[in-house]
Length: 451
Ligand code: IFM
Image 1 (cartoon, helix red, strand yellow):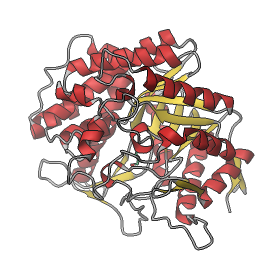
Image 2 (image 1 turned 60 degrees about the vertical axis):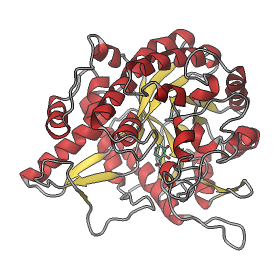
Image 3 (image 1 turned 30 degrees about the vertical axis):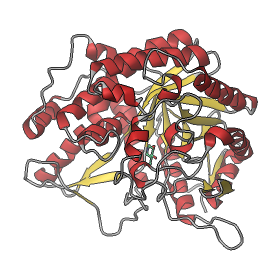
Image 4 (image 1 turned 90 degrees about the vertical axis):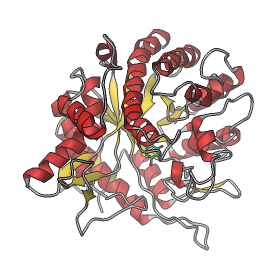
């Protein structure tokens, strides 16, 4: 057993955030309203009654935040662009001030030798487009293509890594199916249509970005979940297969040219009455546009048990599992399994872990330090699993910790802290956590000691 783990030359170390979760300035300098502005301003939607109106105030403190990234030694920074900052009504009139903000951010990153990884859509759809039907409407995919074209034309000379969408499963199924995320709709047919139009808009955007950004590498980020049957029983296996189809194959299969998985189409129809007649000729080819890399967001696994009820199977976990504050099981081995699956089953040419991290209830000690040993152990275990996957031949080329700093955790508001930097939301003071100091060392050494 080696005492230290060293990553291959060129492996990229980064951190990730998203616009709505950190920027604040929700109505500044011509920005339009997003579905998350509307949702968080609706009483009862966010557990602590908070909003992203101010969040980490990154819109005003971006220079200080870039200095922080530089001090950490980050080689790459993944952030998202707020669509309604660029196109306040979703399409048409461009808000130059919005583009200028990201222009400065990109220049500031490059000046500090940090590579920008831009995500075009991390869930803050312009409310004006939702008013016209949102993602269940095909016209929203058309508007996304216009937006992707606009942004890549402005930043494409300097940004060379593009991610079209972040976690379309969450955007579609939590937003339109279960209603836990904006826009808060509970309609499975709409959710499946939303998922299709998210994928379609990705496929349409890929060639547009390439056209505007010579030499760019373009991909999409998926939240993938290793689903394990609770027992060898046929019922538990069937449940695991259904859940895997719903969360993983529904996106991986069409993106990699296999079309929608027939068993899931049938399951959606049987259980939720979903009709697939919105899929048009040529859509599946567009969705399967070749990409340069896949972004994999990994947090946890799911253990599935068949209910025999013909509905979503209940999910169980084992007795000795450790859980983060999100209630998610710590399961680094499943990251290893998933990375291998992506490589061996889908032959994906290049993979980045675009998010990985954990929420724990951090506190500032009397001496001003934030000690977060459980997060540190979580990161270590997952990086060890990632390293083992590389040794098996998986083309994993970089890792982005989620998140650079504590932020607005969607329907959980500010009650969940994922950062390697602590944010005191009352004063906006940033404090590097113990895990952040460890990550800085890891980047400097390109590896870490196991003990
Ligand atoms: O905070 C989110 C992020 O926006 C998307 N991936 C999961 C994170 C933790 O829930």
